[in-house]
Image (cartoon, rainbow, N blue to C red; front, side):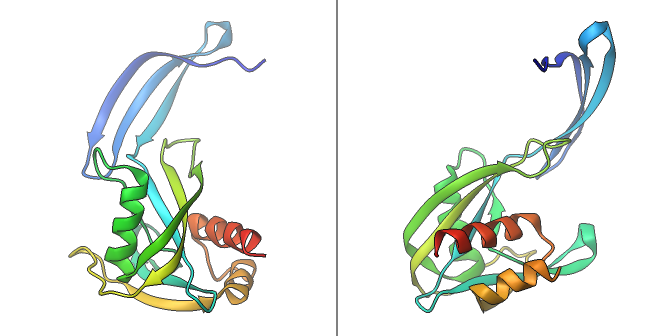
Length: 177
């Protein structure tokens, strides 16, 4: 049986708008101690918006941590006291302008549980109604509608590098067989 680590001390060392960072001292089996650096994140949503002709609405944006423009499914951080479904509806509208008559929760997953508690809630959006996008002031986004088979090829060709997007595309492909 794998034992739990017991936290004996926790120090918050950074508080930002999106994340907090803490260092925990934990007790391991055999009375050994170790430190764990933990990024606290409020959680996020990712949405796979599917058009009537079975194309996926994707967004492109520059991602500073990797110094690159990435092709991704629409996604965003859950605000304080916001439910994941409400966040998914809001983020889809903000980033793409679309609203979905049918928003189906698929599953949730941890992005990097080795150092972060970030959890992403994945939704499938169907029966879309086109509107006007209204991204945040600091977001510069371009939209593209791409065929599912082409997206799957782009995943395996290494052209899509974002993990939430890879997972979202492969899950949606499996569901839409």
